[in-house]
Image (cartoon, rainbow, N blue to C red; front, side, top):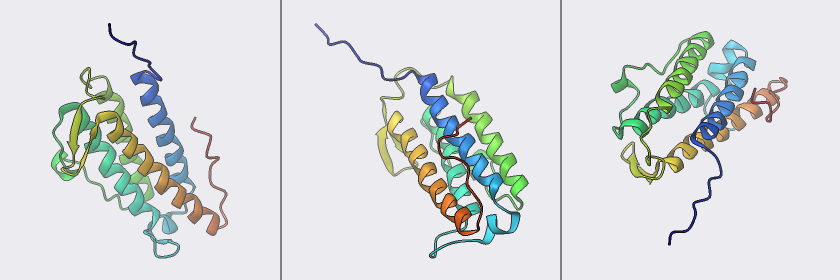
Length: 162
């Protein structure tokens, strides 16, 4: 006799959680003045543009890796992570959002539970790897909120993921 499996959320619920965070991070990017997006920092932390590049370098190749179990870098997938303007960065952000949506439905059954070695260094079940991408984004978005406040700009409401 096997015990019933409790499902906390569906794969589509999980995707919506991630995309809600991505929508909020996009609003955070939009709130930055152009110059400060690329140059402003507090306490020796990297400028927000660099943090956003890191998020994109994880999310784009990350979703590809979850689907295929092939862990490639941004460059190997033909993506360019260094937008020169905020508009270019937002365009890249939107393209990765589209890729996540397109690839999500291709995640093989069981892959969320399957242990993978993401980027040659993070060995976890697929769902924990995705949670790492989300946690990393939340962490860096928090830094962006601090930067905005230091610049006298009200950041987006942390709960508004619409």
